[in-house]
Every structure is written in structure tokens, then in C-alpha cells.
Image (cartoon, rainbow, N blue to C red; front, side, top):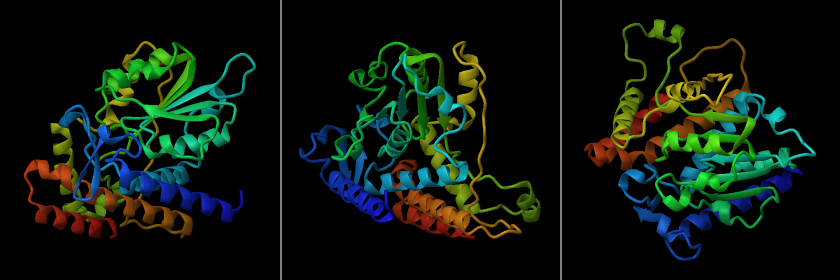
Length: 326
């Protein structure tokens, strides 16, 4: 595909995404029961307040998720880690299948479906995202709803026993999904030798040992650290814990998974020194910082649950942007 065609496809997706989220609270797409509008932002309507996604779930949020997807792809150099290509290798005996949990706008599914045209991909989310209604789809990419809080939204990923090769679960720590129940469903649908891949963003700032020594007793990025402390407190109240340290023990304690491997990737956000200038990586880090600033802005409604006034929240968002751009 030429660069011009790629840009046209991207613009088409962006325009359709905006149209979709402008109309989800109407009957246009048959999605009214899943969404509500607040201060011009669109939110997920769960079976109750604690079963709702805590951030807006509109075009701006999907843009943020796309930015994070691109940053992670650039850092890893692929859409996955581990023996995914081996597990999805073409076979004359079985149809290869993969499920993406918390698919968002479906970018991972679209890119993987292009890469592995012989594999049937299914993207699942707690609400009907715009990818479900996107007019230009791939024949091996489908989308649906998966919500452990809705009896009709689970159904073992709506797949038969043992006929899936890969379950990919990313960014679930912010989703009101019962991770244990999701894992049970993954175990149910995976074939023997199947693969479960999890990817979660840590909800905190990590300072390298070198930078920490330089900072001495100073609180490194104090506003950002305060923001994440308040954020995690608000999410803990909803039962949404940071999954980065929980997934591996869950898999290791299960008798169904072997060879559990964890890999950590660090994305610099500023205040670091290096000998070699890498323009591509610098641009990627700038995208990541912008995504985190959008995240801080979108967290306003969640943080108001802690009792902070709106003017305090706006001040926090401004200061966190300054910290991220140090």
C-alpha cells in the first residue's frame, strides 16, 4: 500500500471514529444502552457504576490507545513478544484462531490479521467500539462484546472448547473485567500448546538508579507521583488494581500454564541523558508524553470521586504535563 493510500485509509478511520462516537448515545448505531454523555465526553454505561470503564471511551480516548499502541510497537519492534509466530503457523489440519481482549479500536487485530491472513482474529471489548461498525474490514477480523459483568457478554469468549491458539490481553488494569474469570475463559478456549500473552502499563513513574542518585533526597517529578497516588487510590476503590505484578503469579499458580516469562520495557518520558541522538525514538517518546497528558486530562472525572475540586484537578493536569516534558 502506498503512503498516500495509507494516509487516506487513516483519515477515513479517523472520520468514521469521530462520527461513531458523536452518535453512540443516539440510536444510530444501536449502541445507546452502552454509553452516556457527560460534558461532551462519552462514557461506558456498565450494569452499575463499578462495572463501568473509569475513563471516557470516546474518540480522544481511542486516539490515546492508538498512540500507546504505536509507541509499544516501536519499542518492541513487533506486535507481540514470545513464540506467537510459531503458535500461529499455518496448518492444514486446523484453522488458526486468536482472540484480542480489550481490543479498543481494533488496531492490533487489523495489523495482525494483515500479517497472518490464514488466522481468524476476534477482537473483544466491554462495549461496541467503532471497529465493530467499521465499513472496511478484513475477512479474517471480527469484533464482539466481552463483559464479565453481563451474563450475555461472556459465554467463554463465545468460542468452542479448545479451538483457539492465542489469547492476547492488553490494558486490562483499567477495565472492570474480572481477570480471574477472563483467565478461566482463556483456559477453556485455548488448545493444548496455546499461548496467553498479557501486556499492562505500570501506573506509576519509575526512576532509573542513575537519575535517582542524581536527584538525591529530592522527590523526582513530585506532581506526577502525586497524580498517580491519587489515581491509584481512586482505582483501588473501584477494585481496579495495578495488574503488572499480579498477572505472572496468577499464571504460575495455574496448573494449565507452563514456561511463564515476564519482560519489562521502559519508555523514557524525560530527564534522561544519552550519548547517541535517536530522532525516531525521541519522536516516539514525545508521542508517549502526549498520550500521558491526554490520560491525565481524561482522568478528571475519575479523580473527582476522591473529592478533589475541579480547579485542583485542572492544576494537577497542567503540572503533570510540565513534569512529563522535563
